[in-house]
Image (cartoon, rainbow, N blue to C red; front, side):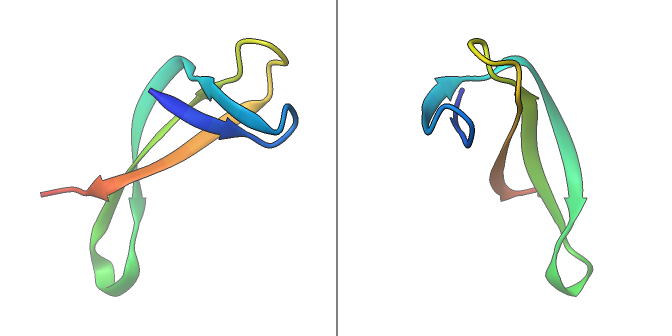
Length: 52
């Protein structure tokens, strides 16, 4: 999965990706993917669709 790296300023493939759950508006749950950038090691984050 790709996410935008703020430090590299381009989309990169997420390394060591984990899916996490966040709180959303109105008590709903939102899915997100988190991991690290393969080139600079910065933490990357991408919000996915709603959890069902």
